[in-house]
Amino acid sequence: MDTSAKRSGLPQALVLAVGSVAIASADLEGAVRRVVADLCNADPVNGTWLVFEGQSMDWLIQNGKVLVSDEFDSARRHGHGDLPNLFRQAERLKAERNLVIHGQWYPECSYPHPEDAALMCTPHSADTYAQAGPVCHVEGSRYRKWSLEQAWAVSEIEELADRLDQLANRFCSIYNLPDIP
Ligand SMILES: [Zn+2]
Picture (cartoon, rainbow, N blue to C red):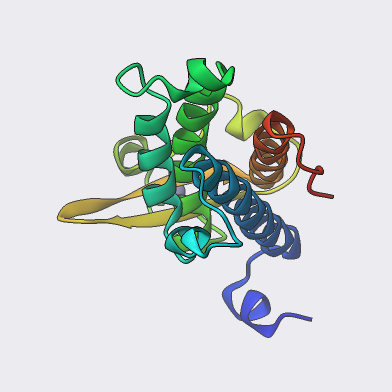
């Protein structure tokens, strides 16, 4: 199928896994949007919901965190005590998602000499190289900082997609919204 994957020599499994992260991430963003809009009593009928459309995941998470913080205490008032924890998890997963989706992927490490690789390319986890299946390398550009390279096992990318899905469903369950299939 995918000629760009063939051109770059990337495994098809990587392409599928990155696609799964993109899909799961969009589902999480939709769930977070619904929860944050609800915390603000936004209503699709009177149009106030529109304020939350098109806002970035980061905007939604940062505002959600404030809304459920002790300062506002809406979580306690509404009995949604787990929300601060869920927003923190969303923030962590968003950073990993950004690297996986927006980073530039390579089938091999950009630093072939082990001494360079040890300094310039970090494994995603202590188990990255112990995972079954291929390991690929991703370079993430950072604002006003040098780019960083990380090694990820494809199975770790698939696991990230699963964690994004699970978190989306936990946000949905707070409001008894239907699970994202
Ligand atoms: Zn590398």
